[in-house]
Image (tube, rainbow, N blue to C red; front, side):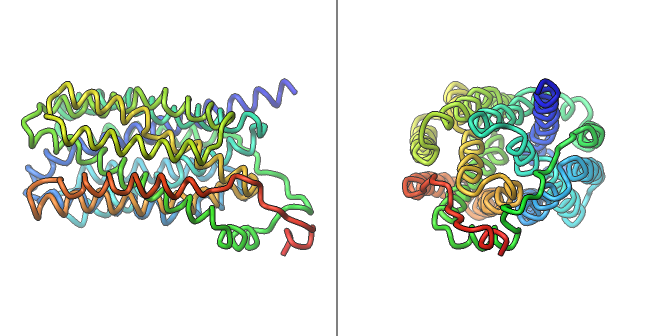
Length: 402
């Protein structure tokens, strides 16, 4: 039992480190939009499209990397993902064309993120941790991504100011390479195959016929739209309104800092209360926070308050959403099913970051996208209210092996 507990703690620790690096580096990309676009003569849509492509490919590849992690364990998937992430940052630092930006920041980093972030890591944690502690463990690992954002954003800004955008990205590529050995040490043990286990095809059919699964997917679309639009475009929005650049990086760092508390609390609450009801309230409160931010006069103080409030709500959706998937469908195919839900998150991310750049270039402001984010909050709150957390019924062994 002690050996099993040590193995579980080590897996949680290594998984937290991988997510901390992956998410910490990713959340600094918004700081590069203005200097790269200005120096290379791009409109903001070029940078925004590359990051939109990144989020889209991250989502499209996530069910496949999740299925590989379910079958072979997370270690190999994380190591390969870390290598692709490092190569993407390196080539991004050397890019001087829209195509190069799309291939590096879009394709390579998008594929790298699919192997080093939530669906793969939380699937490994979900398999290793007892059901009564699963929501809390997922909250702890999700919070690590927020800690990475908080800890690495000031360093990213410092590298940008000290070395310029190109050299800063090369240094970030070296940091991303650390995920390769960390992944190699991640001794995830896939669930042993039992006669009662459901097959991959049956699991997909089961999820496809479950109304709550699709409601969860649509709700996660909203989460992706909001957080990636804010994460990428908020520094530019503040800069356009006369707020100093360092305020934008500080706001994103505050998001990361308070998201540590938010995700941990969400994980704890998910172990005691209805996860779907918690998600309903979370999205409603997000809508209120965004509304207050764009209605009241903008200042550094209001931006900091927005960062704190959004931080408490930022990735709180992750342990609750993955917890519902595990509760309803079990953990045998958790990474794959969680990856499908996450695909919708990334479809939302694609729309949020791309529409932000598109409408900015079209109208010169972000007003329409802020309004869409508010309306989507209300829609997501309504969707989650109707999700049941009752485990799916599998009557006979022949059904689960179908």
